[in-house]
Image (cartoon, rainbow, N blue to C red; front, top):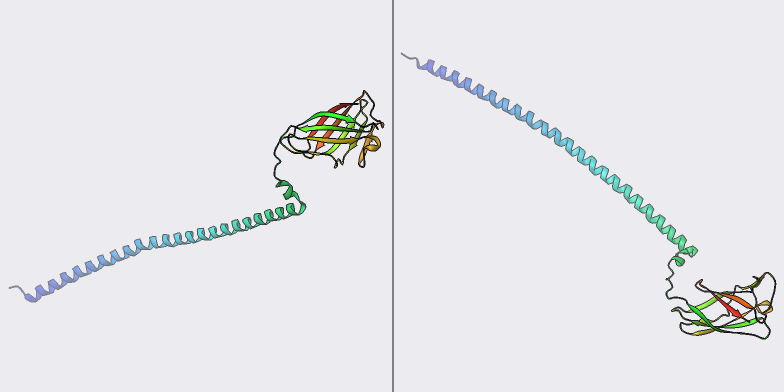
Length: 208
């Protein structure tokens, strides 16, 4: 006969052995899971550290750029203030002059004192013309210079103006002479040079 108690005992041993094997398998899988899960966790921590470092470095770069920008703004502002205070900015912002200067002499008349001559000059250009200086030179190169020709004419386009000039004692203040003094002599020619307010130069020849 089969002993029932023996069968129960054997079944218990088998069940216990299977349970132990299953427990060992579960424990092994759990340890393996911990090992596998542990590595990504370390890499994740390192990635977070790198990201924080990058963000920190970026903030540092932004701070440096902001400081450099402030320096540039201060320098530019200082230069503009200096230029304005010295008048340089105003001279750089002057509106360019338009129009063209062009003059032709139509006739001339000498005074009886032989020290004055009037030139009738037509403005054939498109710009208004005024004079600041004139030179009168004889054939020998002797020259009278009037550097403050404020009493000269202002000639509009297509208009005729009269330029009265003098030499010797009629040259007026601010007049200088290079070479010998002289007066106008009948039959002699003289070179008259005008300088305009726009630094243009016009040369005419007159004969006494």
